[in-house]
Length: 122
Ligand SMILES: [Zn+2]
Image (cartoon, rainbow, N blue to C red):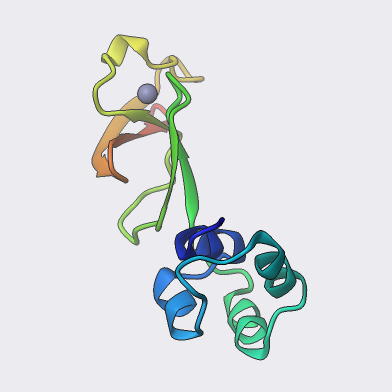
């Protein structure tokens, strides 16, 4: 049975919002689909407000082993070229598309990722 967390992911709302609007800690998939397909006023409002804005949840996926998790995007994250688990060796990462690219790393993304940005050579 989906949890409130699963419900928040599916409806693309924050956990706080799910709680505030009475999504129970366990919800049946049928109920969840019903809310998703026939959203109550608060959800319609939330979706309308968010048009064109950043998604509430993003999928982080490791470019090396494919491990993935859902996370709330942080304002300070740049647009990552790729992500990898922090414990992979740098040599395991796919090479930059542009051989002259300058590779920058952002540590502490999600629970276990390093964010990689390949900036084009100046
Ligand atoms: Zn990995």
